Amino acid sequence: GLTSLPSGHDYSNTAYDTFIQSFVAALSLEQFVFAGNSMGGGIAWRYSLDHPEQVSHLVLLDASGVPSEDDSDPALIYSLVKIPGVNKVFHHVLPPFMVRGALESAIADDTLVTDEMVTLNYELLVREGRREASVVRMNTPWEASPHERLSEITQPTLILWGQEDTFVPVASGHTFDAQIPNSQLIIYNGVGHIPMEEVPEQSAIHLRTFLEAH
Image (cartoon, rainbow, N blue to C red):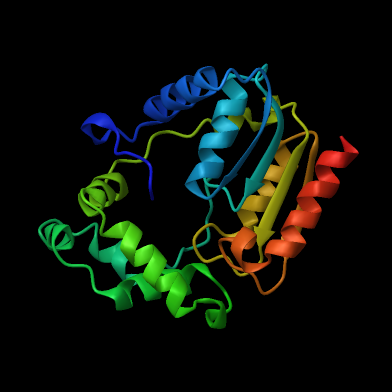
């Protein structure tokens, strides 16, 4: 939410890969643990495939990138932002109740969606240029996913998933676990799309245990 906007609103896989390579070079990182949630998880495992010498361990939290037959249940804002003409309204107007609705769709336990959380996400989304960028990103055509190459991922991989995820179904977590040779899958009951926020202590313990074991 605080990252500067990419030049030309380029949200292609190539653009993400190029940005991460630049970021890694700027910090002089030789090896690192790559963790990602949702779209970030999709970026993480693709990068691990293309730059295996850099990524020592991989952590996927409700990651995107594998096909699923389960129907997702997007929040209202995600449906409206894909309607031509209607999505232009979001350049100027963003009702807070839609931000709350999106969070409640992502999080299984609605009581975790506090007023403070809604306010924070709202304020990030209404920063200059952010809404226009979000409309572009969510309307960027899906690129073919190299999911058939998951078996080439050799890094120790921890897969954390919410059983109640309506954005990326838990079946996708099982697919990652079945295809990645050196993987461990942990599923959280009563948890949705963002386990690091819904069960922060539990997921942090599992992450620490995973890293210490390797």
